[in-house]
Every structure is written in structure tokens, then in C-alpha cells.
Image (cartoon, rainbow, N blue to C red; front, side, top):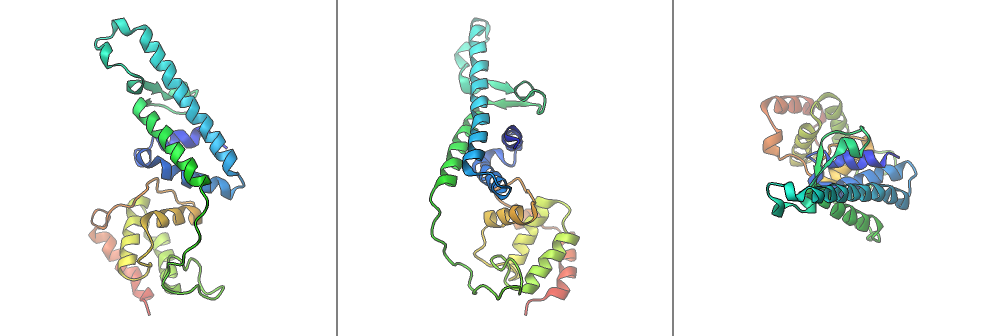
Length: 231
């Protein structure tokens, strides 16, 4: 498992760095699907997070040696330093990481670990209809009918070009049209896309309907919808 890749991929993506706890939980679920235990995943990721903090301390201690030559030595502290990611990763990543980002990663990792190891709450049925008979249609937690699931499949195959914007539009529009249950939250839909199709939106919330819609999407959606009217 490429633990360094997991940490640095999320940390250098502006869509995930501020939702790093959610990102780590999603990555853990994917790792669990291929047989990794919680201990293995969080031990590996924790090792990389520790290396990041050690590298930040190394950079800080270096700057302390040249402190007398700094223009504003009073402004120097550990969290104001930057890590050279190319040096840190032996060339597999480029760019820099601020001390503030390292602090956010440390805190988010602690939160994700607590969430992962917390006792699972008792399941609560929230869908307004009972589970359908086996084989009727899959993913009945998300979709209100077999036609709704089939409609989503058509949209997924024929509609999506920009994943975050298009799936945001699909979620809001299908929910408004009564294809997706009202109690389905954005993060649950994002996690479902990841778990079911390995679609990574790299975000902890969808774009708003106003931002994600345009006239072209409305026309395509309406055209595909004609054969999938709700009963």
C-alpha cells in the first residue's frame, strides 16, 4: 500500500486538504475492501504523517541556524516553515507544503483515526420504503425505484464529462425530481460513488445546483429522462 501517495495526494489537492478527515475515511474504506485492517491502514498513514512532522522540525531547526541573518527573525516559528515535497518524497511529488498544512494533516489524521475506531452506531432505517425483494433493483437505499436506478445508469454513461460538476447536478436534479430519497446527504452520495464505482470526486461536498447547472445539461437531462418517468 502506497501510504505516502495516499497522504500526499490528498494533502496537495485543494479540494481535499480542508476536508482531510473525510478523505482519509474514504481511503480507509477502499483499503478495507482489498483486505487491509484498520490497524494496518492507520499505522501506515500515521508513519507518513510522523515523517512530515519530523521533516518540518528539521526545516525549522535549519532556519534557526541562520536566524541571525533573517530579515524578520521574530516571525519565524515551526508552523511558518515550508517542506520541499520533492526532497521529502524522493522525487515522487513536487511543490511545497506549509507548516499550517502539516498541522491540519496531523489534526485530521487524529480525527479520522478516532472515527474509524469508534464503535459503530446501531443501524437506523431512514428510507421511507422497505427494502425491495432480492433482485428487484440494486441500491434501493439511494434510489426510489427501479426506473430511478436505470435512469441514473443512463446519466452516468451518457451525461458525465466533468465528474464533480456533473454528479453534483445529477444529485440535486434527481433529488428534486423524486428519483433519489430526500434523506440522502451529499457525503453519503459521494461515498456511495466511491464504494460502488470507484469514482473519486476528491471533495467532501458537492457543488450547488446553481453552480453545477447550465442550459446544455438541462436539455440532455430532460431528453434522457423522457423514457424514465416515475410511476
